[in-house]
Length: 149
Image 1 (spheres, rainbow, N blue to C red):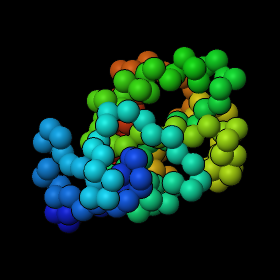
Image 2: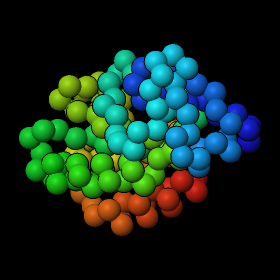
Image 3: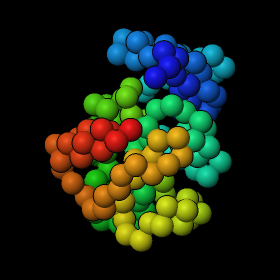
Image 4: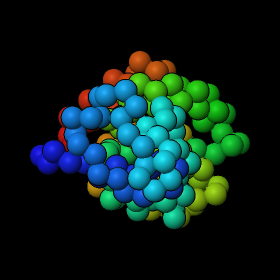
């Protein structure tokens, strides 16, 4: 395992090099291009245009929540996912994909029901689950799935 990580900026998608040991330090880093914090403790909106930088080129695992505005369970899951971002970053980046706005990404991952959570590392699916869940169950599922990363 390399001591340097490539971390995509949640604001501008620029890849930044960061020593692995700095991940757990408060204020772990700022983007070299836009100056925004590399870790904001909240999910990012992921589009097809942003997918490559965040899911394929970044060394951080990416947990994607496929959702839609009209979906009741998705709206129920949204605050749980937001809380999870605060607890899982900086070791996992969390992103939301609106299946109505980015149907190509939903199709790429074969999403047939929402909410669907997909954990991706270097563009490869590592784990998947569907349905809303409480925060403790979500954190447990992610930490168990991270063992495969």
